[in-house]
Length: 524
Image 1: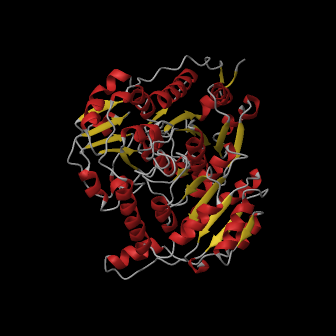
Image 2: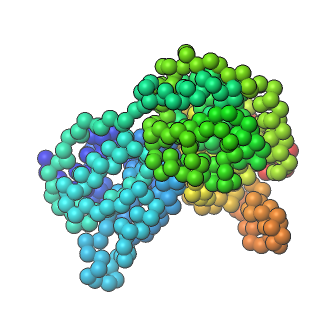
Image 3: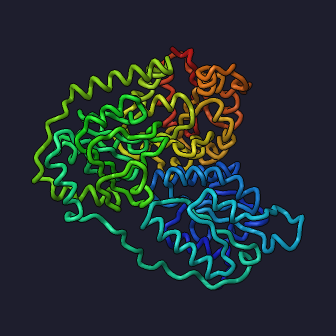
């Protein structure tokens, strides 16, 4: 049946598997809301477009499906650009649909007017296009979902003029058969197998794109050691004896990598935020497996390059691995000694946090999905908290924005009802999006929010002191966070010791609303 185009777009998204949309309605995009309920899609009302974008991000990371957000012209699009940038640097599939002015150049002084809205969005997305007809809108949506499936998942933005959203349109075409991604097959990994067969100290680096449940078996069979990036944590499972952990940024990791006689990096960008140094440290052959040709051609100069997804590469490797002689150059004792030294370094760099992390980890189910913010607590945890499952800790790694954890955790919790989800935020970053407590309460989410409150921007203060700069503008007046949570209708606890913190966390997973758990350095 014919409907306004705004309504048809919601029906098209439903036909392509979208079940939740995050956003805020306004006079410019209200036609997009005409079809949401009729299509059978749940809409989550954020308190700010930045929150809506991070919710879409959190939903996408929890499900592997694209997160979708609806925003208005001008300020709505500008407000969601930070989450779009975060998704771009962290390879998150996100589709942002916005309205736009019919003719922003002809008349000045229009509501929500921007000089170049599409161009602004393009700076933080894979692409940004304007659909001036119904068929163009349908084609762009189809293209976005095809690319989410076939290539590196990155945010896309589609804007539609208000008059087009209001105009009657024929229904969108039915979904076409999705394209098939080029996958690695056993013959494609022959050169890698040859190198593995002569290596005594093979080392794998598992990134966020190495998605497979075979890595533990592969590593064990090969006798290979491994590192993970922060996004790849849990890929080797818990307790693998030759796992160096998410310690690539440790200065000593370059020496370990340099001692390997083969390095295989799968789905790992190996950029600044992975290494915090210019070089990986390898002296042996480097094998790169990645969907992105730009990664394969980067400064690390891999000797063997394979454009493929991590999952198909793992299956192709596993299918032919029986003929590879297991390596014997690594020992569990060597790995344990190095990891013990690195843990002591982490504890010395940011004193007093590791014991709190250990207690918090023990209080959470192993399958808890955690969303963290830019805070010292998370920086420490990412190095010392081993994950039992992959893709269960999400952090704003690349763009490094504050305010990510709470709304992203809401996006994850929406789709994980009945499964444990938790948020870890710092006191200053919490200010950015703390209004989304209202959304979490409204949704009735059983969401523990661990708030690390040291009363300042401690990481910046430490950096200033290290650079011999007198600390300035690193202390901001905090509200009474517990009273704030109470005002939103959430629960709150300020535990006096680690045992009380653990009890509060366990109770929060069963509470009918979110629970803010304020933890301070004095808890020790």
